Image 1 (cartoon, rainbow, N blue to C red):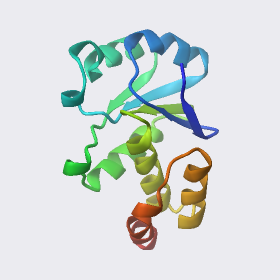
Image 2 (cartoon, rainbow, N blue to C red; image 1 turned 120 degrees about the horizontal axis):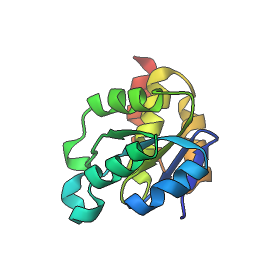
Image 3 (spheres, rainbow, N blue to C red; image 1 turned 180 degrees about the vertical axis):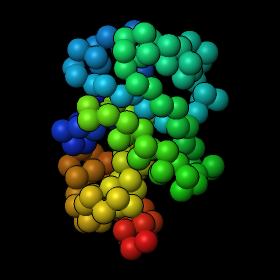
Length: 143
């Protein structure tokens, strides 16, 4: 399975299936976050079948659907809670990993974990361009 390691403890990918859970567990992930709305996918890969597989494997699962049309900063708080649910590695998925990376960046800014330039540079090294959300990152960093 292909995925992108954003940091040592946070990775992202496109859509996964319940069959991917064993591999993710074997790679040391302890929390799975679904950032893809169910309306975008077929029934067999909606959040609930993936949740059942993750929980059956002993992993934590959070469903935080993120669409650009329905974004709210409440999603940032929910993502932060899911990312901090334990001390293990977090795996987040959406259609391409982009939305998961955006939420990661917004969490980092709000928590003050990284400054804006570091967030953008870290994401860019992995192929994700967060420059377009620089104003939101800076706003959260200043709040």
